[in-house]
Image (cartoon, rainbow, N blue to C red):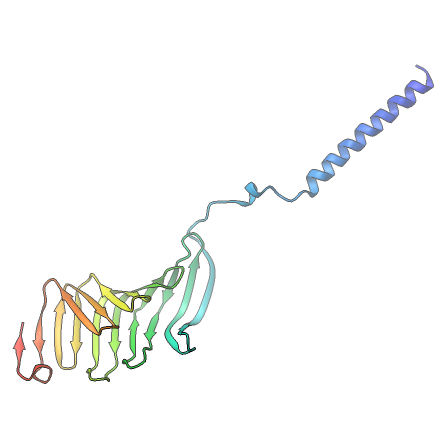
Length: 199
């Protein structure tokens, strides 16, 4: 084999080796394929918060709602959060402050629905012509945007000196109307009616 053929063969091998090394470097330094980054989201916590307080303001900058909890755990798949000792308060001009609490709770991704569980309670302060109102149940759902609190569980309601029990309840904080459903029983105090009545 003559010298020129050997030189050509060596040049060809060197070029092939250089091409191989270049391809390897390109693959090694290339960003990962987007498909490799996509993975199914699981119901696992992705962040936590202690002593949380979140307020929603109206157009004038006044607080409309305040959500507090001693602990929040957020989940990546559904964007919902678990709450420990949650409380949500509604501050509406010309209306008594309403506070809903529970030992534990859940809030959805945009904080429009808050579920309160275990010794759940609604407490409406007295004022503006209404006595104090308290409702107790194992679960309350707060529809923040509608200013409505409801439950499908048995509930005990105390309004002033009147006490009622029912299978379910809907409370509209805009109209201040309480609806009781199912097996409704109780006693309405004389001070609320001008007479007395028993159901």
